[in-house]
Amino acid sequence: MRDEEYSGNVDAAPVRTPLGNIARGLDDASAWRPWADPEVVDTTPSTMIEVEQRAQAGAAEGTVVVAEHQSSGRGRQGRHWESVRYAGLWMSLLLRPAVSPTRLGWLPLIVGLGVARGLRGAGAAEAVLKWPNDVLLPLGKVAGILAERLPDGAVVVGIGINVDHGRDELPDGATSLRLSGVPARRDDVLVGVLDEVASAYRAWSEGDDLREDYRRWCVTLGSQVTAQAPEGPLSGLAAGVDDLGRLLVVVPGGERIALSAGEVAIVRPPM
Image (cartoon, rainbow, N blue to C red; front, side, top):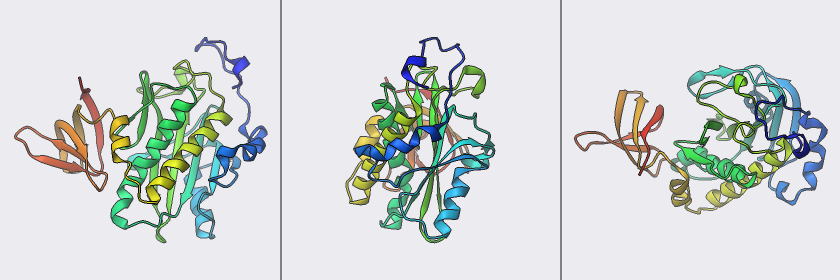
């Protein structure tokens, strides 16, 4: 969606263009250098599958596949969904982190930090993080991230960003940049997000401690939350994130429980 096509009326029908027609200019942007030029595919079951196949064939770190349409995108806890053609950004990245296995739990959080920074750079000034790596705007979730480790130690990271969706094209609790009043073009969002993800990933790979940065962006911390943990439902205060990337929840009675997975809902945000 080009700037002149954004009328400010979020209910107006958007004018959508294929990313493939404009992606050729991305490699001229200085911000693009950390990654290989993206491969844009028209349709695929999942960009995660596309990148896994390339990884098995020996693809280099930084391989990026972007799809105009996914028929069976992957979500957390085995969920699958179909994307709206030309409305968002659906991409997967191949990473080969040379770090201690004990640090890998932070990788999805670091990618989330990069995505949130990139969206703020694209004009979404109120973008924040919900543990572990959902990106929120005041109207709801605008981006999600999924990381899967391959047998050889490589990690495929899937990123989905709602850019130009209308209200009837999204599930409850979700929003898009367009619905949030951000007239962003998909190519600009793509470059900005990948640049910020690259910056955060590089710093983390080189040993920089980004935990304080993450904590400043994460609205889960300091909130009263409920969680569907593997051990069962719980509620308490989200007090921090540990060295493994787990959410620390203090439940009534004072016990501190570390969550590595599970659905977390913010009941009362920090004052």
